[in-house]
Length: 130
Image (tube, rainbow, N blue to C red; front, side, top):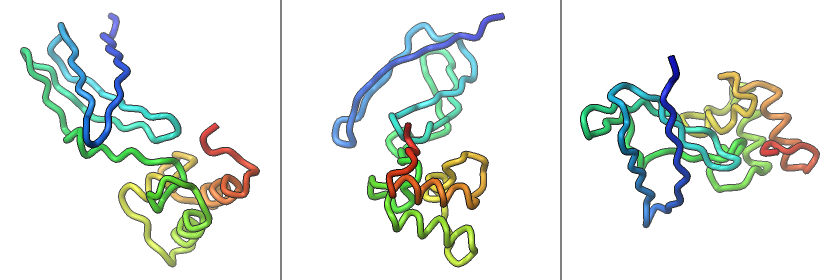
């Protein structure tokens, strides 16, 4: 059997958030993926029942982060590299969104490859987002 798929492209800001309405959706549980160029994919489980959709997340609080940007300042730089390296060495602890941003290999852990790729990115010899 085929799996229903729905797609929408929206734009929004914190001040003017985007609103997505999907009509005629079959009742059931779906995986919703929200993407932004060069950022991590955000995934949430949603349940459609009748005319309502219930989600396991508050969408206005979706953490959109740039791969390698553990400081959250919108730039991958030397501080990001140092924090990821120190986390790997056990002298600094990354948590939550920073931990996800630092795992550029997307293998679930921070390793030497993660901090080397971040370093090479800010030195201009590797592109994390290309």
